[in-house]
Length: 258
Image 1: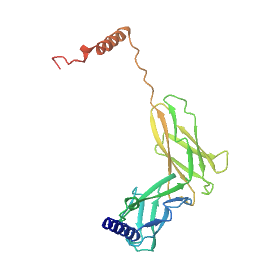
Image 2: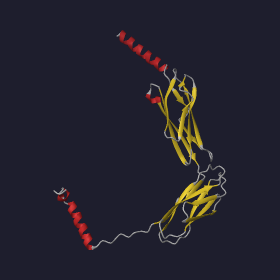
Image 3: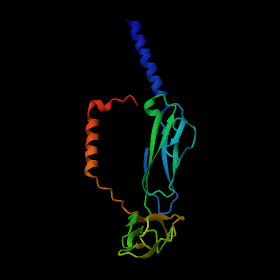
Image 4: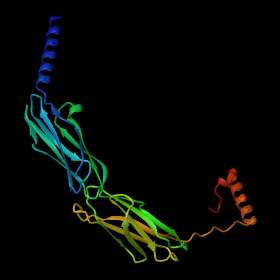
């Protein structure tokens, strides 16, 4: 009885000692919200940590969720009491709206619940222009009346004019001032609608923060609709016979010639 009690005391002591000597990386935050300024090429998030344990922590893997995001650590090993950060850099490119990227960090912590941490970067990117609609079209043979595309400029973009070009000469585009501040009306018109055709309209704002990006919308003359031939009574009768045959068990068996 005394020996069992001593063993129990020994196990408890070893467990407490092991827990006291464990590594533990504590994160200041695992999610960062960013609002890049207009014209920024990158959004950078800093995820700070501290080793609050008693033994060093080693990073074994730091992996971003996509190729547009790069992640790096300041060091490979974090000593007890040491602080540092993981930096996640998101390359904005032509992306707009809410972008969510993650970085998965793995360490040699023996506790699986702490060995893997997912860091989240959320960036809200305001576009230079909001364009509606993205497609204007005419039916074949329709009167080639002009149609309007509205472009609303970001108030901080200082856009004074838009340059619009068509990929083919079958469409013309003219830009006028809109009915509200920072708004433009793009008036699109086909030269004729006698044949089906498709064009891309490239819109380039003169904003000083624009890095050469262009916006694209589509203009199209739709092909003529082809009316389906009306079924004759004989055709309807034949279709009814085929449906009836397919519904019978005999019709599902393969014939000798198949």
